Length: 276
Ligand SMILES: NC(=O)c1ccc[n+]([C@@H]2O[C@H](COP(=O)([O-])OP(=O)(O)OC[C@H]3O[C@@H](n4cnc5c(N)ncnc54)[C@H](OP(=O)(O)O)[C@@H]3O)[C@@H](O)[C@H]2O)c1
Image (cartoon, rainbow, N blue to C red; front, side):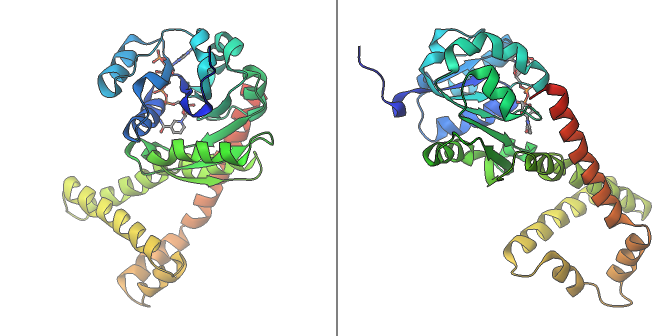
């Protein structure tokens, strides 16, 4: 029997939840046949969703078909990693491993999978609508072609950013992984202010979200740094000046820095808890 060429080999997903579905959707759109996508997913409801949305038939448990995969994507919740990895281990040692799991270190994935070729990614929830950003870290054994393969797989979920040290993924987790929640928190506060000033909650939501979106687009398209864009609209004695002065007096910027560093510390602790 002839060996399949690397490009004709499958991509396997261990866990077929939300993150896996976002990546499988991208693969299908870019022309990967459903038959080349393997998924191990114990939940019947999730398996049905993958079949309905992408025509992909998921399996309930690991089996020898996994050995056909050139790329194995780990997409279970971190607390289920050890349990999910044990039955897969006999079949996946020859593949490139990509993890989207928060907190599990590459050493633990290398040990559990039997492959030193491990890339860890830290995505964020806008990935589910193709607007995420994922931090990426590769172990030494991962080559340039394999890095490109991972970038191509993640492209439909948004942007990617490589970091050179694995510890930097804890900072990525704190900044962009947890970051959408910080933005929602700001929007909640802006909505509360809207109501306090007599606008409706719906009006507050519309104004706050359009402002965050517009300001983000402006900052992305402008050659100016965020601090310069801010000072442009903060004339002395004006309304923006009144708000920013109040925030500075309350120590908002310093509190945000402290909060994000706390998230980084928690990410490192979770890595220790999961081993590796
Ligand atoms: N969603 C995001 O945008 C996002 C962002 C950043 C990081 N992440 C990370 O990505 C990972 C996956 O997140 P998710 O949102 O995709 O979670 P999810 O929707 O809960 O998906 C995990 C899937 O894995 C399945 N599973 C559980 N045990 C398994 C096993 N032993 N073997 C095979 N499959 C198993 C689960 O099935 P059951 O439903 O039966 O439990 C579930 O369908 C997590 O580590 C998360 O922290 C996700």
